[in-house]
Structures are given as structure tokens and as C-alpha cells.
Length: 161
Image (cartoon, rainbow, N blue to C red; front, side):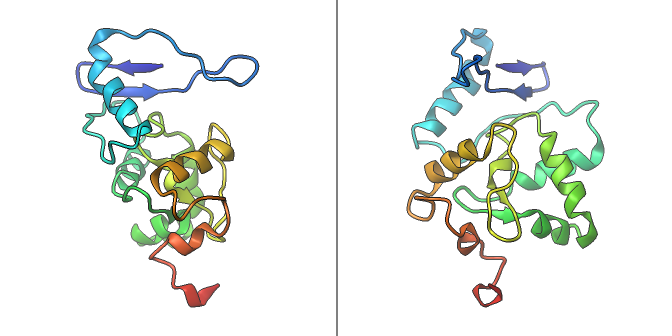
């Protein structure tokens, strides 16, 4: 389900039935450009979304974090600590996690590319299995199984493990 305004996309949700299966619904034709991009992404033919966002009424800190998430390259990962360190505020790793948990545009704003400092998959609104599948889609060579995702993170030297 998508919500848009004249300024851009406002939310994106994966709807599930009681059994946990994705629900397919029709959509307003004005959403076609976004639907086509999502289909291309899931088919492995799109790495960078060309989507405008409408973040009105969202906390400034959250928006800042979401914009940083958009800079994480396709098929790569970062940690909550990496993002807090990028902000030059290492103590904000939990606040970064909170902002990520409120991401209204999952997949498009790639919060699935953020992992725990120990290399483990951590919380994701649709579960770590979905997070793992998205990472596998983006980088099947490095993410055939959960394993140590930290090896794919160039910001963490391998000698620190």
C-alpha cells in the first residue's frame, strides 16, 4: 500500500493477511511510476530509486537519518554505530535505530541495509527473514545465508573481529 501527496511519496507498506502472506491490491494509476520502480527493483533491474518524498510533519532528526540511509550503496550494509559516527555523535546509535524503526518508506529508503555492530541482522518491521531476502536480492554473492554480514561492511576493518 502506498500513500502519496502532490509533493511525493509519503508511505509504503507491505500488507499481509492473517497467515503472514503478502496481499496484492490494485492501485491508483498515479502511483504507476513508483510501482514500476518497485517491480524493477524486485526483478533485479533497479538499484537506485528515483522517487520524491513528502516528509512533512516528520521529526527533523528522523528525516536526516532517512536521507543518510538513501546514501548506503545497493548491496552494501552499514551499522547503527556507523551512522551515529557519521553524525559525529557516537552515543546516538540507539536514536538512529529509533529513527530507522519509524521509516515510512521501507525498501525505497533502504533501512534493510542497516545491521547490528556484531554483523547480525537486527530488527526490521517485516522481520529479519524479509531483511535477509532483501540483502540477498541486492548482493546474492555475499548474502547467500545470514552469516557474518559484517564482512561486507567496508567501514569496519576485518582485523577487529
